[in-house]
Image 1 (tube, one colour):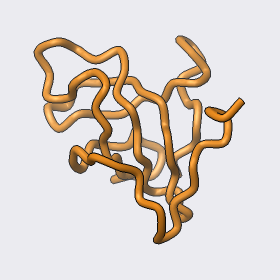
Image 2 (cartoon, one colour; image 1 turned 135 degrees about the horizontal axis):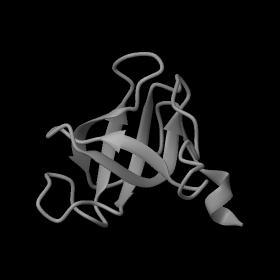
Image 3 (cartoon, helix red, strand yellow; image 1 turned 90 degrees about the vertical axis):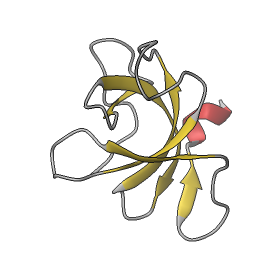
Image 4 (cartoon, rainbow, N blue to C red; image 1 turned 60 degrees about the vertical axis):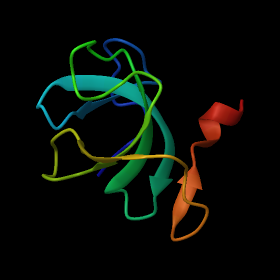
Length: 92
């Protein structure tokens, strides 16, 4: 299950996720799917040479319970239907 803010040792508002290159990255979850197995994340604190770029949106998916979610694809917007909810913490 993906939870918002699973990176307390650095910043409780950031989440860790794994890039396709298997590099660990961090970002802010903007939206979470109702199944808690998918999220839209804004990439921050990324490696320069990696396949995840700072400021881009990515769909991440849980591939194994208890493991960090993995990048599925780059996306260009947040879905407005189909079970997605916006991260309310960003509105405060």
